[in-house]
Structure formats: structure tokens, C-alpha cells
Amino acid sequence: MLGYTVRRLLQFVPILIGLVTVLFALLNILPGDPARMMAGPFANPDVVETIREEMGFDRPLWVQYLDNLWDLARGEFGRSYQSRRPILRDLLEVFPKTVQLALAAEVTSALIGIWLGIVAATRRNGWADRLIMTIAALNLSFPLFWLALMLQIVFAVFLRLLPPSGYGAGFDQFVILPAITLALPSLGLLARITRAALIEVLGEDYIRTARAKGLREVLVIRRHVLPNALIPIVTTIGTDFVRLLGGIPIIEVIFAWPGIGKYAYDALVFRDLPALQASVIVLAVSVSLVNLAVDLLYAFINPRIRYV
Amino acid sequence: MRLSIRESATFDWRRFVQARLPLVGVGVILVFVLLAACAPFIVSDPTEIEMRREQDGETIRPPFAPNSRNLFGTDQLGRDIFARVVYGLRTSLIVGLLVRGLSMAAGTMLGLISGYFPKTVDDIIMRITDIMLAFPVILLAMTVTAVLGPGLLTVCLALALVAWPDVARLVRGQVLAIREQTYVEAARSIGAGNWRILLRHVLPNCMGPIIVAFSMGIPGAIMYEAGLSFFGFGIQPPTPSLGSIISDGRGYITVAPWYPGFPGVVLTLLVLSVNLVGDGLIDVMNPRGAKGSGNGQSSA
Image (tube, rainbow over all chains, first blue to last red; front, side, top):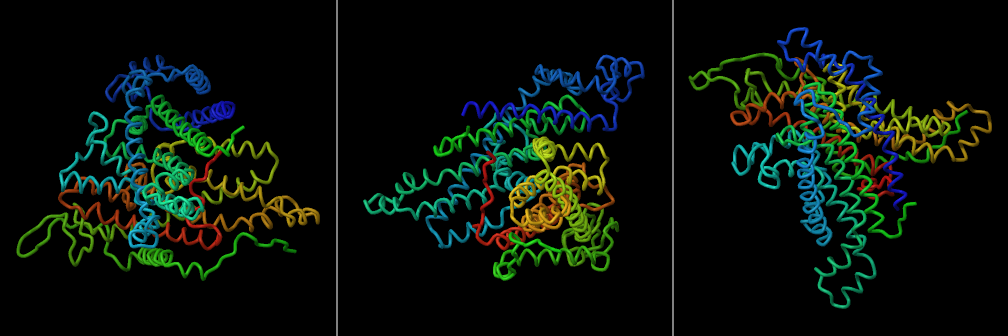
């Protein structure tokens, strides 16, 4: 298990180098002179030249590229062109906020999705089941940015229940709308998987035994059905979490949530190469760590799986 | 001489027709395609500006609420939103098909090569897909359009660039199974070349999953285009795009909720319908697989 984990982590090193290379190539074709951007629109040419020399923009591209890689290898993210602060400090500020939002969204989606799945499975072919499965079949495939906008209209503008956007202290009213927007598209899938897994387990002999010995239905579900149906559900939550992270930049920008997605977006708009690069790396690493965690968790709840 | 025997792609139309939801999807898509194709004959000029209008003896200013002349109302310049949406649908459909066509062509090609040829080639292609898949999709697409300059064609290129690795992975998986089949061995033993085997024997036998992947990828392409345009990284005016109409309407949410509302409803309906058709195709192509399978597979 440990060997497997280490190997998975090592596999990520070449991917990161590739990531940095692609980004470096893309951003150096980008129109716009970083030295001029930093100096501001009214700076005189001398100042621009000084900044160019100071930041090393006058060196050949391949030197800049290798230098960049070497810095990253030492864990040196550099300074943001925009805020002039060390990027690491910026990231330490914005990343926890993204984690907050992502966790809030995933917990919302998991709780509601699994609950819907349980309701559907235990009232199989009833009206509740049909309603839930029809909604699940529609897949709730809303464009995220539009869903966000509509929820803002309904809950912030008309009902005035929640703030339209912004960031409070963490898990307060500001997190509700973005978390729900992120969670909604995955409810259907989770409900569907939970229902299918539960129905399979409900047909097992040991469930009949549990019922035959007079166990209350609630306890049958909680003690015997749920634990045995857990594997597909947990896997789905894991893959769903990865999907959810993909939507983070869009949601953070629309809800003005000061997380890493918005940081990356601002960096792109400002042509802030080091900041964009650092945030893309952190996002990519987070996604792959979540993937790894899901695989390990998978082995944990299903002892028959062993990674070697 | 043709030796290819189709094993995987058995298409049962009756199953497709029996399921109602996919048919609803097909219906909605047909209506949208007709609207988009006949746009100039159906709707008024989407660029026509109307800054004042007489109503009940009073002069009112845009945005006008939905009425008999403007089904979806108008924007702040009095332009008919229904007309803009219909032209936006055109863009969405073109982008959906073009992006998926490009990414499927590239992904299938690389997947075939990766699955069939020796390990070094396979390794190189797979490591490239690893790198591409590690990117946050929306940020990579934004960066590419920022580099190439926004516009219909560059948006399509950017979205195809982020979409091909999934296809390559899928096709590669199929090829790995198919190349061990006896008919491939038979073709090789009678002297067929690598490319002939790939195109005549392997490719036709992966068509089932390829068709499903084609339809399942269209909604994503349409949504990402709308998203890019919403953030100003996508299609630029005067080319209409549902995403940019919604973006323009953002500022009028309180006074004219129909302005960002209707384009979003149409966009959602389109995406939903293509999804339903894709789900239907999965059921038809893979009669044994239960609904919802194929989701939640671990990548271990």
C-alpha cells in the first residue's frame, strides 16, 4: 500500500513538468509584455527596461524556462506580477477558502444525493421513486454559470434571503449559494448510484435474515444495507468531487469567492504568469491527490482490493 | 476482401424508440436545428435596434418585456432576444459539432495508434494525455483562447484541445482488447498491413463506443463555449452566442429577468436533450449494461 502510494506520487513529477512546459509555452505566445504590464500604462520606457532586466525578461526563453523549472523544483513559486507579494503567501490565503467551498459543496451533494437514493430504493416503484429517478435521468445538466445566476436572482435579489456573492468568515451564509450551485448537478448521479446499490443489497439473503429476526426496517437499512452498498457510493462521491473541483473556477469568479480558482482567473486576466502557473499546479495536484485518496479509500472499505 | 465482423456495435432501433426520454431529446434537438437552420426566414434581424416604442399612448424604453412581437422580450437596445437566441443556437450547434468532430478525429487517431503500436509510442501518447488531463479544463481553455485571440474558430480549437485526451484513452482501451481478436490475427496472417488492419478491422469494431462518446461530448462542448463566452474569452460580438447574451443580461437581472433567463433556458434544454439522446444511445449500444454503469469507475 505504501509502495503504491509513493509510486503514484512519483508518477506525478513528469506530469507536473509537462504542465509547466505547456503553460510556459502558451503564456510566452500570449500577446502583452509583462514588464510593461507591471510598470503600468504611463511608465516611461526606462522604467520598463529596468523592470525587464530586474525580472530577467531579457534573457533567452530557454534560460527563463529552465530557471523557472529550477525555482519550482525548490518549491519557489516566485512573486506575483500583480500583487508583488510572494505567491506562496497568496496561495496560503486563497487555498483554504477553496477547500471550504469544495467541502461544503461535496457534503451538501453527498447528503442530499444519498438521501434521495435511499428514499427511491426503499419506496421502489412508488411515486417518490419515479419522481426522483425522472429528475436523476434528466441529469440536471445546467450550465454552471447560468445556474449560479438564476440562484442569485431568486435567493438574493427577489427573496433577499442570502447575499448574492462575497466571502464571510467561512461556513456562514455566503457559502450557501455557491455550494448549492456546485452540488446540484451531481445530485442525480449520486441518487441513481445509491438507489442501484441499495436495491442490489436489498435482494441479498442476509437482508431477509435480518428482517426475519424482527429487526426494524430503519436498522436493517442502517446496519446491513448501507455498509454493504458503500463501495459504489464512495467511489461516485470521489469522482464527483473531482468533477466539482473542475467547476470551482467558474463558481468562484461568479460568486466573488476569493479562492484559488478566482486567483487563477485574475492571474490569467492580468497575464500574471507565475501566479497562474502556481495556481494551476496547486489545482492539478489537489485533483490528483483526491484521485489517489479515493483509490486508497476504495481499498480500505473493500478489503478484497489490494494495491501492490 | 473485407474480414471485419462487427461485434460491439449492434444497434437496436426498437430499444431506442421504446425509451421515451431519448425520443423527447431527439424532438427538441430537431426543433432547435430547424430553428437555427431557417433562422433568417423565421426571426427578425437580431441586430435591429429600437430605442423607443409607443404603448397605451405612452412612450416606453427598452428592455421591453416579452410581448406578442418579442416572444422573449428585448435587450437594453430593443433587440429581439428570441432572434438573438435563435442565432446563438446556430453558434452553439456549430461549436458542439465542430469541437466534437475535431476532438473525436484527433482522439480516435491517437487512441488507435497508442493502442496498436509498440510500447514507446503508447507511452509517449499516454503521458501527453496525462498532462492534458491534469489541467483544470476551463482555465486551460481560457488560456488557449487568450493566446489565439477569441473567436469562433479559436474557441473550437481550444475546446477540442482539452477534449481529445479522454477520447484517446477510450479508443486505446478498445483497441487493446480488439487487437487480440482472432480476426485481427487472421488479417495479419494473410498479409494485411498495420494501417489496413487498424482502419478496416480495428476501427469499425470500436465504432459503438466512439458514437456514444461523440454524442456524450457535445453537451460539454456547448456548455464550455457558453462559459467561455460568458467570461469574455469566447465568441465575440457581433457573432451571437448564448453565453455572451447571458453575460450581457447579467446587469439587467432585476429590471429584465427575461434577458438572461430565456437564453439560459434554451441552453439548458439543448444540453439536456443531447444528454438524453446520449443516454439512449448507451442503452441501445450496450443492452446488457444497466443504466448508470460506466460512471464511478475507479482509475486504479
